[in-house]
Length: 244
Image 1 (cartoon, rainbow, N blue to C red):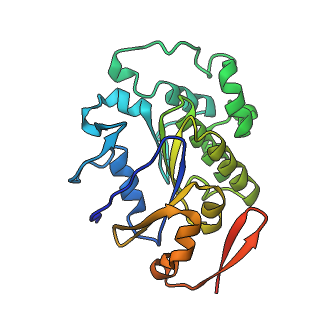
Image 2: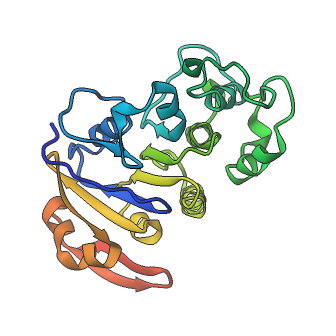
């Protein structure tokens, strides 16, 4: 149950959303993306009420990456990206997106970099069900970003990735945040500290803090919400936290 959640996501930023299990992070993302409709209050996108956007336009502007995804039919990675490319177009009455389906032709030039960055170029013909957990996570991220949305809402996008791919994915999200602002749920506090521009903290369905990384660490709010003391260490990229 969410109560009194207030949050701004600014263009050009990567905002990490952290908090203990059951804090309401996933529910908050679903409300912001228009997926969960049982809420009261105000949600705006670029100064307009979210409800004022046609469904198709909202789907193109906001990409939602769920924590879990299980397709109900056999899909290849190329099929998955095709679906992503067409996000929102059916409700707009358009059947032409301007490039061929990946399942029937070579990737358009402008998508090649995305496939290389997420290491998917060699997986287009693979069935989603045959992929490893990390490969599935990268394919779903590519589907979310393929249309260059204004905002990405990502619920634990690195949970299934090994440390190397966690770093590469966070580096990629940070690199493309000027094109696609991102609100990302993370459980790894050090990755949040390393890559996020700001950090928002939730507990018990409420937003308890939001601010710059160093300010969040200095405030003591992390000890309060997680019930664990943290010891700060200075690294080559900034502050890191270890449970004490």
